[in-house]
Length: 191
Image (cartoon, rainbow, N blue to C red; front, top):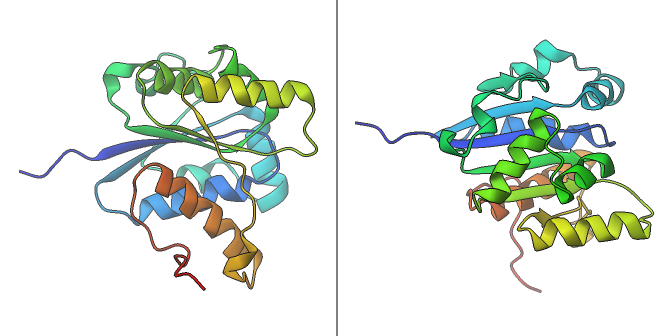
């Protein structure tokens, strides 16, 4: 009898950097025993189309299960469903604020709220710059509740040769934070 799959929720919100969510879905697709659940905000769909030229069918095909943002009664809206972790990639400041203040007003923010209340990993690839005090306070509030704020910052010590290298490094870090082995980026071996 095989083990149950490890359920990972991927949220894509409307910040620039939709490629992070897409690359995360691709990485999860190649891992055994992982079941990916996708939820995308309305602004996330606009960003996916504008930045990557991807429509709903293209992105849905990367996930095992795709959920509509308005389906607040979907499986991932409940702690009893047993999703092990969630990554919001990218995480807009709007979504960060909603998470930080418990505003579970759509399926993405409800699923994030479930991760926090169930004390399960929630990784937020926050995308905005520069940051004002409200952004910083929301990051503190989300962190105090148990989220991990992980802005996708390039690691130039890796000597990236392409944008893809930079994206993969950030996705690898997010997977590391979930305890998911991956080989998307080289590991630091020291000088």
